[in-house]
Length: 75
Image: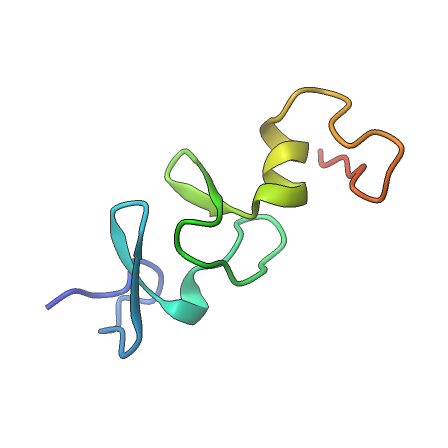
């Protein structure tokens, strides 16, 4: 039986993303912890990230979202 990649329990409400099984609440952005929907997020090194702003700020071109509400800079 499949187990959640995060908590290792059998998911009652299973979602598949990045080729792995997750509980729906365990599929979260690695940076901001926002709950994600399968297929509507980005991936880096096998970890999920929300498309905006985290993935763009962490891995996108420098100056991404510059000057707007999306201008986050993570170190």
